[in-house]
Structure formats: structure tokens, C-alpha cells
Image (cartoon, rainbow, N blue to C red; front, side, top):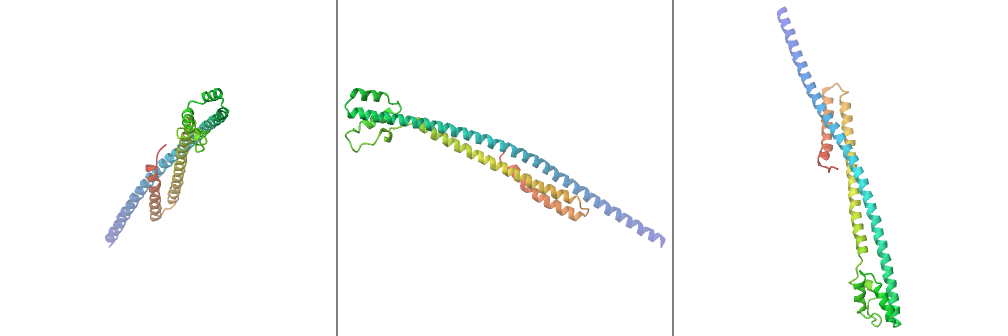
Length: 227
């Protein structure tokens, strides 16, 4: 009987050692997986912060360019308005000279028209504005009228709008990268909490939740545009 008891003790020790070895192996695997998750969290956090900073700087740069284009557009529009006023006042003086039959003075005012305005004036003049009540009120209403400064102002405004929208897109991307870092911080918190537990099942459950949450920021990091 003592020999049987010794055999039982030996078997129990063997089973206990096997169980401890199995638990130790599972614990090592769990720690390896936790280390991998923490590594992914660290890299993703650093990358998201870096991209958020880049997109913020890019946004500021684009907003600055948009403001510059707006100023240039306002300058071109102001110059165009000055040209329009000059042409309008010259037309008025030309009409006065024509009405008084002062051909020499009328020719003088015609020579003072800006080259870009002349085609519209010539087309309007052919409508006999002094005698034709159906004639357009002025050359600026003719189809031939063109103002390069007005067109330049419109073009600059369009460019400013496009650049501003790009800046807004940069701000949105920066916000998205910031949200990624917040999610990663939640994953990091779960990992820190899980390591406080000695129970394997609880620790494993928290790890699974953390790994599941990690999939979302990693997906966005891989798919979002880079600055």
C-alpha cells in the first residue's frame, strides 16, 4: 500500500507540473499578444499624432493662400471698378460733345478710351445712341464688352474658394487623426487594466475587447490620406 500511495503522489506531482507548464505557456502567449497589441498602439498613436500635426499645418498654409488670393481678387475688382468708372465718365463727356456737335472734342474723348473698352464702344456707337431710343444705355451693356480685371478677379475668387475648401478638408483630416489617438488611448487603458488582473479569463477578455477596438483606428490609419 505505501508503494501505491507513493505512485499516486508521483502522478499528482506529474499532473500538477503539466498543468503549471500549460498555464505558463498560455501566460507567455498572452503576454506576447499583449506586447504586439501595445506595439501596434504605440506606432499608430505616433503616426496619428504626426499626421494630425501635418494636416493642421497644411490647413493653416492653405488658409493663408486663400486669404492672399482673396486680397488679390479684391485688388483686381477695385481696379476693374476704377476702369469702369473712367470709361463711363468718358462716355458721358463724349455724349455731351456729340450732342453739341463738337467733333474735335468728341474725337478727343474717343482717343481716350481704354483699348479693351474700344470694341464695345464702337459697337455701341453704331447703334446711334443719340437718335435711337432702342439703343443700349451704354457700351458696357454690349456683348463686345470685356474687362480682363473683372475676369481676373472672378478667377482669383474661384481659386481662393478651391484652396479654402482644401484647407477645410485638411482640418477635417486632422480632426479624424485626433479621434484615432483618442480611440488608441482607450485601447491602451484597457491593456493597462487587463494587466492588473491575475485571472487568465478576465485578462484574456479585456485583451480581446482591446484588440477589437484596435481594428478601427488601424483601419483608418491605413486608409486616410497622408499629408
